[in-house]
Image 1 (cartoon, rainbow, N blue to C red):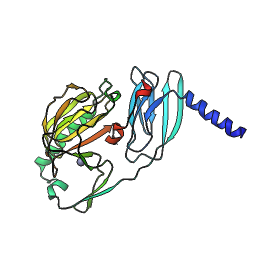
Image 2: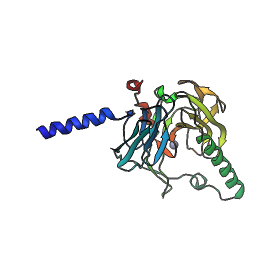
Image 3: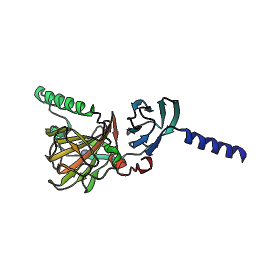
Image 4: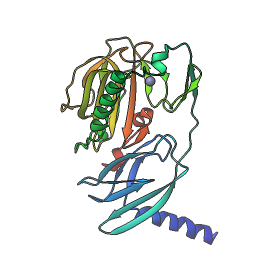
Length: 272
Ligand SMILES: [Zn+2]
């Protein structure tokens, strides 16, 4: 009994000593918004990033994050180190048959390959954005509401061929329905005609934590625009390689794909 009490106390003390507090869960595909010492270096798994001048940092776990992750804070007071359990998820298998072959395997001609390379470069440059604002503290709202036709993480089998997992949340809505910025941020990409994505907008919600909005029919923002939560950024469409009008909303932190639905549940009010 005494030993148990001592253990409990030790755990409580450790918690109190942790120089970081977070909203969000340690779970595959989850977002974490944390507060620590200004400028602290924070390691989560195999990624190390720096908190901003007020100690805010936004992070996340990948779809296939291992069951344990290093969690470390290096600041002027020293180094604090812990390990966290990352809850595993099960993902759906989604089979789609009867797609035109060009939607599954792009044509091999050089002109087309050059286009894909150009588009990949533009996306890479946009992902490199590190906006100093803190849109991620706004709390996230739905960019559009409608029937969910695809969820994060599902394993896709297209025309019988296994493909990369689907990282988006697909929300079906009539073409022309306004798409709202789910939180504040800066527009880092706005292109009406990408091969896969069609009309495409990226919003850096702060520190490079980036929302991706695909298949837009029209786009109401330009690169460099600072948008507020709830602002119209474009309209739902069926552009790019799609079978019908919907918004495909994705979220990326560094090379990790985050589940958009995890953003909707985030509550940072205890950290402010
Ligand atoms: Zn999708």
